[in-house]
Image (cartoon, rainbow, N blue to C red; front, side, top):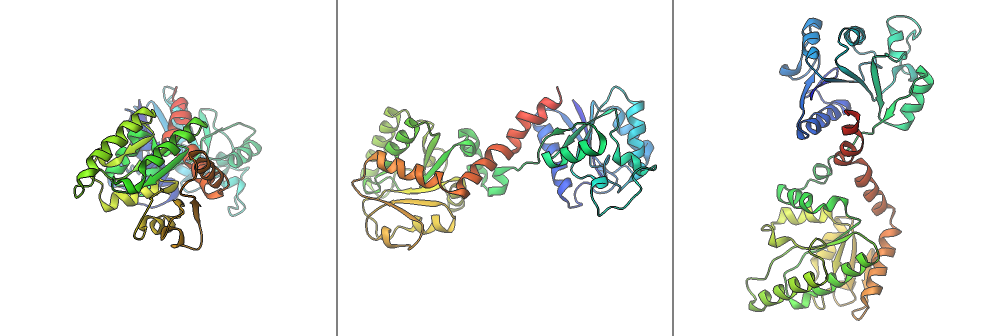
Length: 361
């Protein structure tokens, strides 16, 4: 489809609605549509100040989505023109995307019952109205007597988390942002790191119905001849447990640099650190700085690195006990639950698939 995205301004003008218009343009383009942003201010190639130029730019569109223009008073000639254009161009689908309602905002004091202000307090019959929240939907219904479809604003999680290109691609390939529990074990593949316990724990969590995954950052240790054999053993155990998509050896996919490790921490819900022995245990400190839970074996010196936040399990704890500790800790964490809810409900990928794409059908 040919889609026009219309607003008062577009980048380089900075604003909340401008950022949403930009995100929508990328979503439409990624889905194979021809998306054009059109404004009266902003980037030169998008600006059309003359109404006749605007009319011609909209005439060849299959869909025109006007953000805020039909409900806010910042360019009343533009609002008037869209009412007229909608009548002139019945072949175009017209959508008013409502972020704000001036007529419901006491900060705007205008005679809403008189022209041209009344345009902002009525629903144009040629437009489908979309609002960004249930609150706006209630306001719009009370104001106009009409119903509006609710489609929320969203986020690009990879951008918000600052993922490196390699980690972003890896997360997309394995659907990591949609997983229920993401554990990270930054480690070389050495027997004392007890990586096999992480495999068993993830297998147990999955048996309990949890969509859990563990990210093991490193490949075999080039300084330790026995590391290759241990790596092969771990891969065989992973496959025997049916964990090809749930126990991911990140180093098998790309060389993990320092910035990639930071991104993997950003992806993770918790550190899993079951080492049988350590000289220090730096990942515990890193996890705390990243504000994620840390589950570690009750061995010196790991168990004494921090006074707060460590979830320690006995060295001889059963797989079931450790899985229960992880479930209990994360289920009781408001921050973890809010993070998962935000990623589930407000990623642009989800909003596109479930709400925006059906709007075009």
